[in-house]
Structure formats: structure tokens, C-alpha cells
Length: 137
Image 1: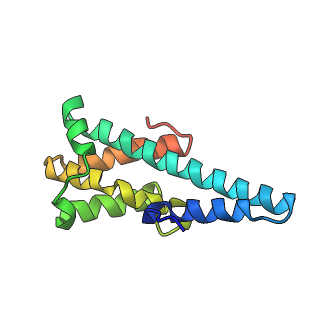
Image 2: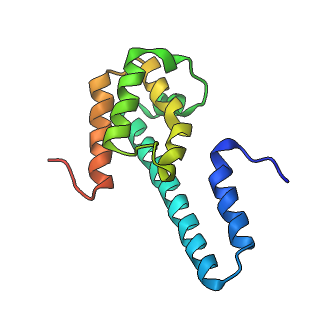
């Protein structure tokens, strides 16, 4: 048995279930489930990168924000933007969107860069519109 990072456990479980499935129907159902999970992961990653791009003031700042180093997880602003992202974009309490958690260091880093909460929320709103197929006026 190989060790798997916690965020990849759902993928590993589905892959194992696919390889040991008994019927073509079961295999197809599981492959579809895996495909949906991978698509959700990519959507979340893309949305978070868009939030960073829109909220930051320069490409250099955006690169800094994407680095995993952070200490800002305890500040009030961080908690506010994380909750806003959950409500407006992807609710990580749903198993399909659990991978959103691995990108929250970027929200903490936005806060550490002293980017105003309202600017971050505005960036989230813009990305949410794209997720829903809507555009902001």
C-alpha cells in the first residue's frame, strides 16, 4: 500500500475502485465520478488563481501570494475571506470541493499582503460570475 497525501485520498480511492470494479457499468460510473472530481479540482484551482490575479496589484505580488508559506491563517480578515469564498464559490464541506482547502494559503497570503478585504471579495465576486456563466456589469 502506497502512502498518499490527504488531499489525494478521494482520487486514490476512486482509482482503486475502478481497477477492482467487476462490471463495465460500475467501472463507467466510477470513472465518471473520478472525472467530475478532477474537473472540480481544476475549477477550484483556476478560480483561486483568478482571485489572486484580480486582487493583487502586480504580477510579482501575485507570485508571492501563490507561495505556500504563510502565517496569516489566524487573522480576522482571513477568516472573513475564506468564509466568503465558501459561500460564493465552492463549499469545501461538499466532498467534491474539499480540495479547495489546499489553496487557502493564497487567501491568507492576500491578507498578509494587506490587500483590503473588500478588494479580495470583489475578486471572488468576479470569479464567481465566471463559474456561474454570468458576467458582472
